[in-house]
Image (cartoon, rainbow, N blue to C red; front, top):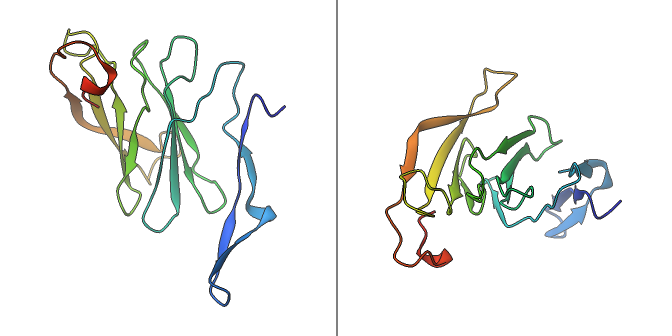
Length: 157
């Protein structure tokens, strides 16, 4: 059912023709939705293309949001991070470091500092030594200040 899941299509670069060629063997049915609205809002790819992150801030009816991070070459080490604050739009923006070992994830409608929709950013790091938790938060949340008129574009994150 195409309305409830996405697909990641794999491509390989052909250095002879200097083109990207679709490789069906790398295609994976992923990012399945368990009955809720999924809107892919942001995406980031590491410098060498080995890690891909997709932000879905409207993942469920309460807009907790989620970010799906996958090792692109075979999609092993697949993990989904779910936002912890209702309506915060976790995953509205995502950005990976060049080597794909850290990710910044925004929640522009977070009320973390007590002000409505002031926003926050969280940094996560890939944990190569754990088979359970592949990505763990580094440091504290980076929290925005009070917004002037609660306009989306005034929000931090």
